[in-house]
Image (cartoon, rainbow, N blue to C red; front, side):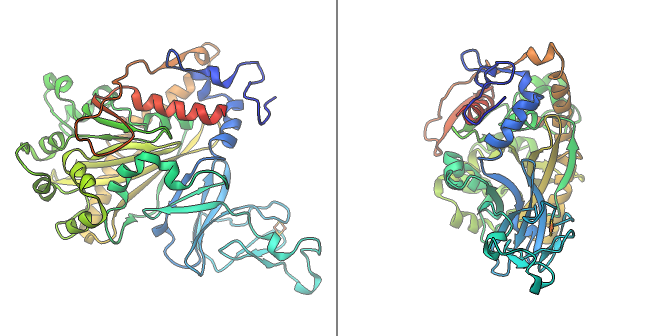
Length: 462
Ligand code: FES
Ligand SMILES: [Fe+2]
């Protein structure tokens, strides 16, 4: 039996021992164990900040979307004061689901069971037949609102947590915020979603995707090899693939909270998408020729306004392109060929929302700067669908692995096997590197994924 302070599973195995720190091995049991999963709902999903939505999904007063924090369903709603609220979708009367649809606009949410009604800020309006006072006389109306989570917005992204006393969102991001800002907080109007998120249920444990999104780059060589073979990414010459696979050499960064990003030298990107040598160009000239996807020449001055000179320089020389936010968010920012062969880019975020030890819901949001022209938004949307998520030529490869790893962890022998993180680059910051966190310059290895597991272990064991 698990208790709050005890991290020993019913068969006597300690959770801490399932992540072997000395040998850097992780037990596959963690990918399918029901008891571990129940503990994760409390210690991971009950404690960390979770990405639920972007505020442009709910632009008007009364707009709402229904999402999940772990297995707790919540209503993300905008109230009359323009605030974003995250409300537990459970009626305080007898526990019925209050909001029965996935999204919409409603001046109030009324429970279909006995009719208790709530405002978009969660406050209790009343029960039918007011004179009969059907909410009784023990609790005041103020006590009968929907349970509210703590909410913080970042770059318009809606994060929430049940952890009232935990760190702020800024503290949670730690040193990785410097890098995330470069992708998510860089123009006056900020980002907007390019339609509702794609949602697909995967037969896999959420950690297979979470850990891979901790900047696993090594798999590019083999899992994404078809992209190189058809010439969509890097060299199309088979002989060159292993020598010139795109982005294998770069700078991986992460932090003790488990977030990570891979910064890929702009030279690689330029030669990949433009076929040109930019080694002699200044950072300003580089940004002008190949600005980040969605940033037009007109929007370039806004970058300067929102980002520091150090962030600008990094964006020009070695922009962060792929990574994740602990525990269950993937980030992808790509310079990709469009269907017509012209260069276009895409910015996407994923959430891996647990639905049991062997299922998760795979969310994909696509974004563009709000102030970029409509034709750029359209092109980015198409590029996103073409490259990202289960429809995407890049990421459909990634999702191929998750169900197999999860399936393998269910066997009597399989669950005793380990995943290995023994190839490390080791901390090594290039001279003049402007950002903080743990910095790994060189061939992409296991450092950031191992940090992800250590962040997981700390939360599960503490
Ligand atoms: S359960 Fe909602 S009003 Fe009774
Ligand atoms: Fe991948």
